[in-house]
Each structure stands twice: as structure tokens, then as C-alpha cells.
Image (cartoon, rainbow, N blue to C red; front, side, top):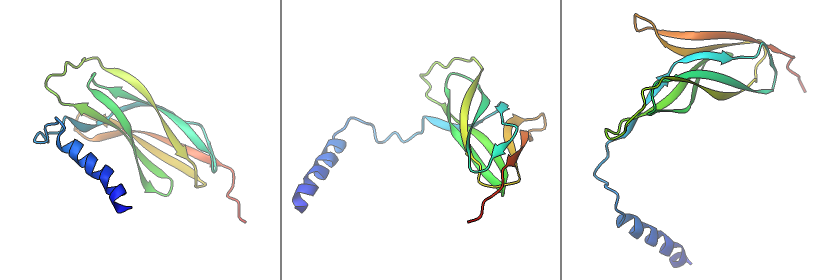
Length: 147
């Protein structure tokens, strides 16, 4: 029984050891970047226990930068700081377009607290290299139920 389980594993190890990949090249071909938010389509209010699709418009600086996701940090019970995360390719052989474009990505958000949510979306840096944010306050409609 154990032999039957080990044979496929040994085969996979043998295949990978003979592959033509250059294992000595461990240089990353990308790095992560923060993408500046220009607009957020935020609802005027939330309903408790509902999930919302929030459209976030961000700036893509060139053709070698790609959307990776959202980094949402809970800074208080209903306070959130949101960063759009991108990756930037570094391959020297790549010809990246220099076109700057605005792109929309959808963030899903589930409302689990009553009161009011406060969002801060990273929007870049000012002339003093300080972070700037687009801020939104969204009240939650509906009361928590007790069983």
C-alpha cells in the first residue's frame, strides 16, 4: 500500500529534477506597488449583515503594472484603511506601454457591525511625500437582533 503511494511521488520528483528551468535564477521578476485610488462608488448606507460590491477606480501607471487585490486593514471596530495592491514586472526585455489609465476593480465588503463605517482609501502622496486618502463615512441601517 505504501509503495503504491510513494511511486507517484517519486515520479514527480524525478520529472521536476530533470526539468529545464534555471533554478539558479532566483531574481524576482516583479515587485508590489501601491496604486492610487481616484474614485470610489460607495453606497449612501449599508444594511446590517449584507455584502456589498464597491467599485474602486485606481490608476494603472503603465502596461507592466497589474491589479493584485485589496489590502483592507481594520484600524477600529468600523474603521478601514484600503490599499489597492498591484504588481510591476521588471523584466528588462519587456516593452511596457507608458499609457496611464484608470481601471475599476470591485471590492466585496460584508457589514457586520452597527453604527457607521469610516473608510480611508489610499490616493497617493502629496508634494511633501505624505500619504493622502479619499475618506467615506457610511451609516449602517437596521438593528442587531438578539436571540
